[in-house]
Length: 167
Image (cartoon, rainbow, N blue to C red; front, side, top):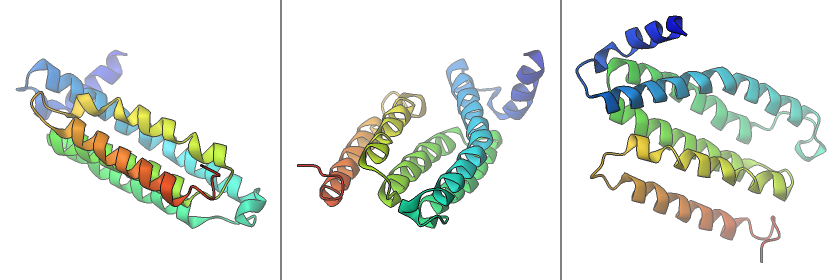
């Protein structure tokens, strides 16, 4: 554990003069970025595997789902470097925006069964739990993220209500 602590301390050396709350938040977002960078290739490989074995996708790779994942992965790499360079606020908000965008893009592009599409909403709720870590105490960003996701949810439900059999 000390090995990782020293690596994180060196990577986040730009935050040495900040208060402990910013340092801990930066550490959390760095761990989050590294976890995403480790898990997303596996997730993309699993997505490709599912597409190649699913008649709904014609037993071929369906790029409207894979392209947002690949693009998001590239953005997370950039966000990780921005976080290490000391741009905490920009990196934290960018990560949230990218994660929300990937989630909603995949839900919109997915052509599988309704349950598997709608259970992805749980991911948006999990991402929303990270908003207080990126927001300042006097900021309005939690409200903006909440309202934006409600608007996207209502738009999604309105646009896909016939395909998902929503009354």
